[in-house]
Length: 135
Image (cartoon, rainbow, N blue to C red; front, side, top):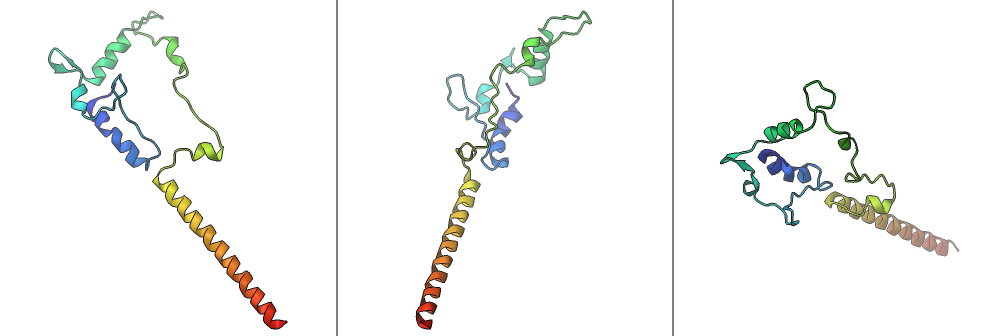
């Protein structure tokens, strides 16, 4: 759940990360949400604010230490396998989802390698000619 402003700003994540990170909010059936006005949660005809829903959720927890304040259950201290971090240093893993900058760099690298190969071939050809003339 997010407020309307945060939901509308999600597309900026892709722009600001230059395509490295893309966040696409979706309905329960997997189709992308295109108009966030359609998914506003209302209560008694009024928009339910994010801060109010979080406060209600926190208040729903039991007060386990008797201080009058609800305590977050220990269940929430782990990710339960939902947050996956890939720390692989494999070149294939690092380049499996390239963005436009990766493609530009790869193209520049290919052109540089091609130029080096052509210069080496040209130098070899010139050296062969010079040896033939000297002999």
